[in-house]
Image (tube, rainbow, N blue to C red):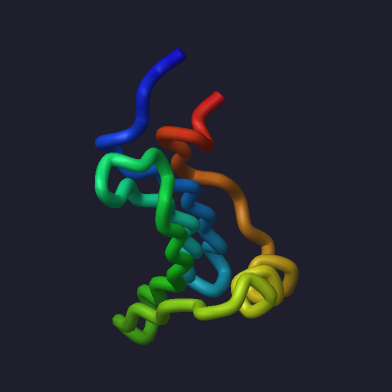
Length: 78
């Protein structure tokens, strides 16, 4: 089993119609594996980044579009 204690984990979705990336990220903190989670939206149309404070907001965006997984690493990798 790999040790991801010092590497972040990413799961990135993309909706080509909305030109919007959704990013679920886990980062290590004080050598604890996947200790802190952050979720982001990155709009290519509006050239902006939005941090989601609530899982429900992230999930609403994901459910409202046609997202496909474009990248997985760390704990999300197969």
